[in-house]
Amino acid sequence: MHHSEIVHRQILGLAGQTTTSPVVPRVTFTDPEIAAVGLTEDQARASGLAVASAHADLGSRGFTHGEGARGGFVKLVADTQRQALVGATAVGPYAGEVLSMLALAVHAEVPIAKLKSMIYAYPTFHRAVSAALTDL
Image (cartoon, rainbow, N blue to C red; front, side, top):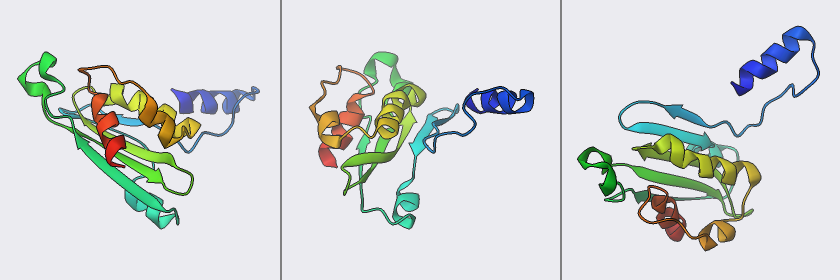
């Protein structure tokens, strides 16, 4: 929708945003869902960033959603010099929903320390983000 509005305005010669942010969230609606935002670990390294990554399984965080909601993970990619996330991937039930907070964190360059200080609701899939931040 974001890109279609840019094209729409350009075709009609209307004022407004003509470029897009490099932080584009993407979700593949499969089972499990696969969602990502920003740079992959390989892309971050190739761009010359000082990179750290962390991974956390969803584990049993989805127990309230039934047996099929127990697998998955969150992976975070951070620029260690800026101490901010530059990318993230979520795989599992509701990964597209989990991606929302990660897209905000990457887009706004929220400091990792600030993300670590948040209180994450329990039991939610977002707790995997908290666990990955602990390992970062």
